[in-house]
Image (cartoon, rainbow, N blue to C red; front, side, top):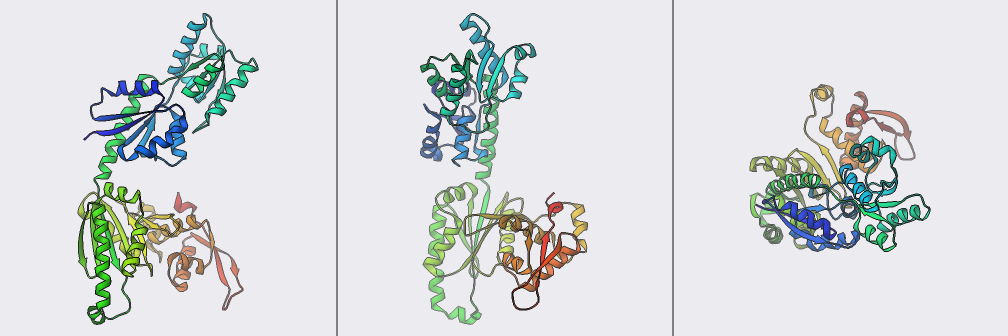
Amino acid sequence: MKIRVGVVGPSDSVKQMMKVGESYPDLNFIPFVYENTEETEQIILKNKEWVDQWLFSGQAPYYFALSKELICEDEATFTPLNGASLLAVLLQAFLDEGHILKRFSLDTIQEEEIEKGLDSLVNHNIIFHLNAYEGYMPSNEIIHFHKKLYEAGKIEAAITCLNNVYQELTAMKIPVYRLVQSELTLRRSLEHIREKGHVNWYKKSQLVIIGIDIIRSSLSNEERHLSYKLKHQELELKKVLLQVAEKMNASIVQIGDGLHYIYTTRGELDLYMSSQSILSMRDEIYIHSKLYVRIGVGYGLTVLDAEESVGIAFEHAREYKGPVVITVNEEKDVKVLMEDGDEISYHTRNIGNEWEKFFKDAGISLKIVSKIDSLSAHYQKTAITSQDLAHWLKSTDRNARRILMEMEKIGLAKVVGEESGHRGRPRKIYELQLESFEK
């Protein structure tokens, strides 16, 4: 198994990374050369399906891609620049000019790296005007930074980490030197990307079970058995599931009456979800079969573990009256997929002996409080009534009142007022006190 690494950067940086990468036989390097950082966007969009990991020449293209949501942190890295590289550039500048320069402009690299990489004698005798930004900054702003300082006579030369900035300043006849990564830092980056690549391959091979459960109407079992309409609907459901299974290179099994399991891997599911979502699968089922379904997605290291996860997903899904999609990962963290594309996440596992004792005599579970904590963050609301909570949990107002009263008893909520203007007694307004729970 070779990890496919997309190497992105200017020509000289890519050439250096490819040369150092020759000593890593388990990595397959694919070069992508650009003139300007902004070209990174098209490079990734056109080639992401052929690349497992991305290695960027510096922080500019990495954070540019991250800001555009073209990559996520676990599938990319960049080679950082450090003080040792800066020392080499200073030496080159002194040799080229024939004397010691004392005033420089410098972009990208952080001040702490300068202090770590330069001897205190050198550092105290050289003035650096820093543009140590974090993330991504357009190159025209960086060019303006250097140009303004040079024209004001505040610097003797510029030092930049970006190739296009170097080219532009050179064209302006401004003395400029380019900071490049050292071989040592490059090797560290390659080790890091190799490690992340193996982790991602492992994740891609992880087992996933997608459970599809028909939400039954109020018909009796006998009426359902004799309903030809329902049988036709179930046939249409199976057609949709067969098409989905084919796209995922998966197998499909009917577990029981109205319950189907699709067995696949995380990698195949991620590939499927790159063009459509699990919510769209639910909608497609309804369009073709007019059946409402609950979908539970369970991840696991083994078949047994994945089946346990999908079981937990259905346990939570049945709390909802209508169609819903819930995923449970190998850590047993629950995610509810919302209609607007957002997700609500909460934990189901016990988080320690102190909380176990805390909830021992309470009339509510750790799980329900964790869920309320996540819902409160999702809706950005901490002052709620029982009606609000009933809506969040898809439960009755009576059950919501009971939960809030129990939370008040154990100090996770307190009454802060009343809400009137409706029939019946005024509703109590509770302020959720979940800071200690979150910690």
